[in-house]
Length: 289
Length: 177
Image (tube, rainbow over all chains, first blue to last red):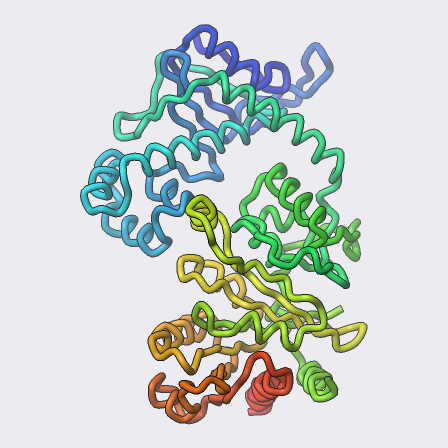
């Protein structure tokens, strides 16, 4: 009989503690909650397991594998995310080695000199931690822990001590709470400030920050930007907070906020054809400068 | 408010930042920084990209953004995001560095594939003693006759204005054709 419940009642951190202390081997699956229409004893909506959102595996109390619906966990993607393989290399791998297992692919890549064994271990470890830290901030969703179930033998399992994961995860939860407090409403939009100050010259942006910046437009809500970039609410909150603190963006209430918006508006979009009069105006402006 | 975008692209060190800095009304947000330590190099390789953007406000209703593309080829997946919705683009070429011409041509072809928007090629660093002339560059880069290849000195505002104006004229011509 698997252990099951809802992380609303028994948090991911508590589950990790339990698995660590008991030295358990098995797989924890977290699902999207589907309302059953019934209420529990606390008068909260009862949730049935829906679509699978995340999977985390443990061996003898150690974290060994994690995957999430938004984070493709195959080796090629993990190495790509870690900057060890280019998009082009990943594309070729998917075309030519679609049926190759992660272990076989790892061996191929090491033998071909593309990556080292350390690269692979570190990249998988980082991917696993990213997934687990992310799901530690979730506060809703049915879960099921199945004893002695592990991912297929084709997967590369990298053991990670849970103690440090739990401590770091708890720190991130506190950070997440602060971020929610700072930015409670993701329906706000972003815009560039009028005068970015001198002190922000030479600032470094991460890939994710850059992606958010490219969508900055008073017509794009933060929620839409997150969706377009496949980011969780926490990821987008952290990035927006950083950009806002650096003075690179400002929060604005988008026009027609009450009305539901459809689709993301890309920055300076070609979707709205530029009129000839706009080009004339640009020419006049440049001539006058 | 309507915003329109032009992309300034080209190989690493071709003068994109300088170009935007010369014409932008705001301090260009630039992420280029010298890499001094191995640790920083590792950090940059993993997470950091270079990105510049500048702005020209036409009036209360119209703003032009100038986006400089990241120089590192490994971040070229971002180019497509940048290219989306652009009015046109400028390909910067360092006229004094023939070893970068092939890369410039490759970038030009990549952007042409992203969007069928007008573009011009700026033969930058024409004030350099070793600079190739615009006409020599046209031959070296195999640029078709119909495409504008303009001499440019990115640190000179008038020169930058000229390149952008020529691009706008090309955009107008396309609209009218």
